[in-house]
Structure formats: structure tokens, C-alpha cells
Image (cartoon, rainbow, N blue to C red; front, side, top):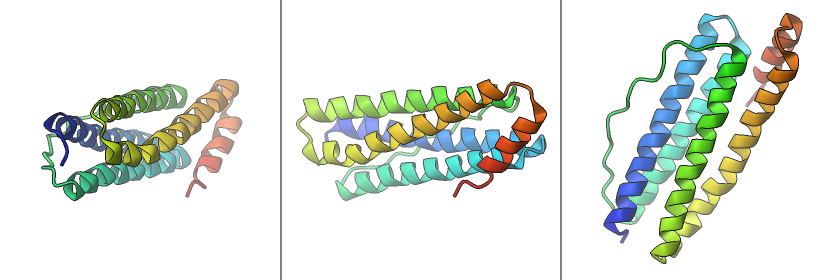
Amino acid sequence: MLSQKMQDIINEQIHRELYSAYLYQAMSAHFEFESWGGFAHWMHHQAEEEQEHAERFYKYMLDRGARVILKGIEQPPVEFGSALEIFQAAYEHEQYITASINAIYELAVAEKDYPTQEMLQWFIKEQVEEEKHASENVAMLERIGDRIHALMALDRQLAERS
């Protein structure tokens, strides 16, 4: 059985993951509206992954006999800046999610909750990938600047994400 403190922090993480999905879907909608289909595709794929992350936490809670409490999801921003600004925001958001997963892990260690520590290993590895991909896109966009042909090439490249 999970401690109440652990249940609370994982329920909060479920909320964060669902908000992340909502945020990335809003970014995808923005890119789609601006006719950047590849950027939109990348963000939509990101949104789907965040929903899967929430589901993993959800199922883990149920497997451990804990109560899942879903909270309302606040509205993400509607207005976004440039592609670079959006990907910078995504990278910063991934760093925030990494910190929150690390906090859960720290609690699991403090409580000697070995099953939760084991479950979190997948998320810790996943966050390394998430941050890497977001930071790579930021770096590419920084190099590209406002060169439209290079932006179009990157947009085509990101459309191939599976």
C-alpha cells in the first residue's frame, strides 16, 4: 500500500502529465493554425506521450490499491510566440516535469518504497530523452534563426516523427 503522502504526490503528477498533454496539444493547434504541419505533428505526438505517461501513473496507483483523484486541468496558453519560443517553453516544461519526478523518487527513497522507486526508473530514463529531444529542437531553431527555407526543412523533418 502506498502512503498517503505518496498517493498525493503521484495524483499531482498525474495532473501534471495531463496538463502537459493539454499544453502540447495547444502548441500543436497553434502550429497547425500557422501552417507549420511538421511542428504541429511533433507537438501532437508529444501530447500523446504525455497522456500515456499519465496512464502509467494511473495504472500504477490502481495496482498498488491507491485511490486515483483526477483534478481539473487548467487552460493552457492560447497565444504563442515563434517556433523557437515555443520549443524553449517545451524544453523548460520538460525540465519542470523532470524535477517533479525526481521529487517523487526522493520521497520513495525516504519512505523505502522500493516498488515506486522501480516504477520511476522508466520515467527517469524517459525524461532524459524528453529533455534531449526538446533541447535539440531548440538548438536547431537557434541556428536557423529566421531563415524560412531552413525552417521549412526542419518542419518537414519533424513531420516524420513516429
